[in-house]
Image (cartoon, rainbow, N blue to C red; front, top):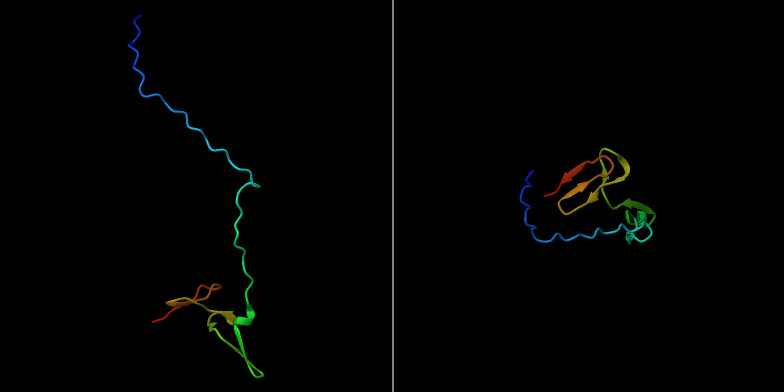
Length: 85
């Protein structure tokens, strides 16, 4: 039996090194931690009267404030939003 002609070898194949996975202890940890809500910044004291600085959510009611952004107000609890002009 006749053997088929051998193909000429193309460029030599380079062996790629696989990166080893770092163990959980060696991986970098996130540096930012969650901050606690600073409740004292949401209220204003005038004499003996306490007033709220931010608007409350019309759906959720008292105690839930709307977050202020550049062009809107947003409630993170019920996802209510108001667009500002």
